[in-house]
Each structure stands twice: as C-alpha cells, then as structure tokens.
Image 1 (cartoon, rainbow, N blue to C red):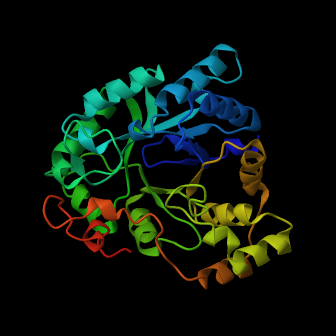
Image 2 (cartoon, rainbow, N blue to C red):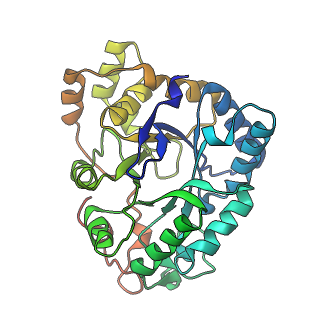
Length: 316
C-alpha cells in the first residue's frame, strides 16, 4: 500500500509520512478503537497520541487486538506519544505510565509536548496561573535521553518548539531531536523553522495540516481558501488532499485527524496527488496566520513566557 511510504530520521529509524491523530474532544474509547482498526485496513501505519489526549488506552487496545488477529505486525506500525507538561521532572516514569496505558513495550517516538513545565497534578490541557513551574529543559531532555537508552522508545523529539528553543536545546543535548511536531499547513508555512530543522537533520511533522477544522480552536480557512479550491479543481482532487499534498511536497510528514471513514480514505488519497511548480507558487501567495496560538501558556506572573511572542520567539 502507498501509505507505507516513510522518511528516514536522523537516527536511522523511519516515520510513515501520513499519520492518524487520535485527539478527540469526546474521547469515546469505542469510537477511537473502531476508527483505528478502520485506518489500519486502509493502510495507515502511524498513530499519534499523547497522555493529555486520553486516547492512549484506546490506541493500545485497538493496535494490540489487530496484532493478535494478524492484521498487522508490531514492527510495521509506528506509535508516537508525548511527555505532558506536568511530567517534565521525570520523563522515564511518565513514559512507563504511557506504555502501561498502551499495553506496549515501547513507543516509536516520544516527544516533549510543549516547552512549558506545569505542577505534577495538572492533568488538563489549559493551565491556570497557579499551575506553572520553572522549566529546566536540560533536566527534561536528559530524562528523554534516558528513555532512549532504556529502550522505552526508538526516537525522541519535540513538539511546539521554535527555532530559538531548538538552538538552545542543542547547546546541551547529547542526542539531537529526531522530530519537531508543529502546526504547519498552506496558511502557516514555517519557512524559518523548516530551514533551521533542515540544517540539523530534524524532521518536521505537521499537525493540523488542514488548519484544524473540527477542533474548538481550528478553522476551515485553509480548505475553503480560493487558491486551494482552485488547485483542487484543476487536479480533480479535494481541497484537503491539496493541503496535505503541499505538506508532503515540503518533505514533512502530516498528522491527519478524522474518524470519518470517507474522510480518512480521502486524506490517505493525498499520497496519489502530485502538485506542480505552479501550484506551489500559488500557495506561496496565501496570507499566513498561526491558528493554534496557545495564549493560555503566557502570563505576566508565573509562566516563563510573558507574551505569546515570547512563547513562539516571534515566529507568530
């Protein structure tokens, strides 16, 4: 199946170029499990979860069941999970708990979810002012490297890290991050970050590659954009396929989130679309705006970031 297409990471591991995101506001376990099994049959092999999504048990259950039924081998699937901000003090214990929830011996990729540390009891995505702790990224990354040494994961990386934060991390890291998972789509093209990550061999994985429609913070502005619509018409494709095709054309992997079988099939169909130079030049004309801004991670008292410009180091 075409969906087995994968890129080679800087440590020799591979990452399937289309992944299925498992965040859902409803977080209904049965719905999630059914969607994952459907996705496997369609050819999806990369499944993206996180402690804060609450979907790790459903992801693990669906994948273990599919493995036991012979639908897929463990070696053929790729599981990404993430260190939540309240676990920076002990990534090893956090990953052990993730593995327990998944029922797996290892994950393929473990990411630092945000460059923010929260108090140990914060198990909700939007912190209050009292919830922040001082961030010691050197200690956090040392813990991530221990996870790798212990075989709890095959690769380690970052999520939502700006160019400046990556350069700071590389000052003390023994292991270069394999991946930086960030918002990226035709209306937020991440040119500066992609160039820096390219210099260090860090792969960019795009979340919300369609602009996050269906999420509380998301928008249909990307797929509704006249340029995207026009390119879709030209290729007899869908706007979603054009947006995903753009991300893939930049050498990124894309994490798509839909539990609707028709849309899941449509999304994986982006692998069959080739955009030409004219299409790519047209997309470069689109206005840019960051959609997932995370204003709630900045405040003037307890957060290390007084403004969202500091959070994103003016990459916003």
